[in-house]
Length: 208
Image (cartoon, rainbow, N blue to C red; front, side, top):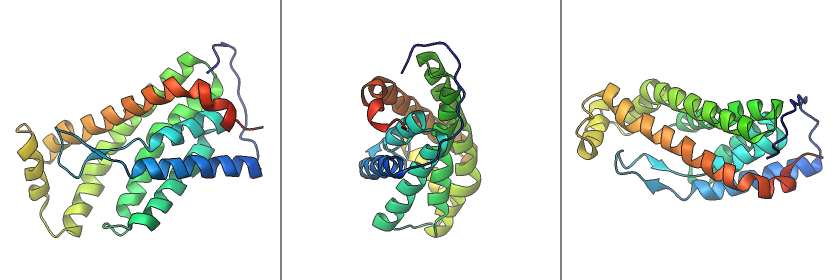
């Protein structure tokens, strides 16, 4: 990432064959990373962290937020084909929105001013956006959908949270002590990884 402080505003360029290939490459890497999930001690077993947003965020920084959103979409669609769905597609749509909530704001902010400071601000804004939106979507969409899909009341899902964290006693505390920390941790880890690797790999993915 350049340390130049001059503000640069660019319109989204047209996607050529090379750019489409790069988007496909990053989406493929994202799908692979999505298959490796790490359980967390403070959340139920169905909340596992992965780093599939790393290539999405790289794409946002290198080729713009629209390209990043495409990478996220392709990643979700390919994972849908590979692993199927247990929520009639609702979970996949929600995951797409939550993933974009991290990467697209970061890409928009960084595109206006391509500096390290701007990248950090963008990733911080994206992490907060993903955390807030993730809490709302989980509380009002995902958790009710999962409960219906598995034929169990939401209280049963809350009970799974209580088993690993005694502070979780209802849906509100479930979101506060499981969902929010999960998204916050994921946003921070993804941001740190991209911040460390972007400068080295960005020449490969920048638009020409």
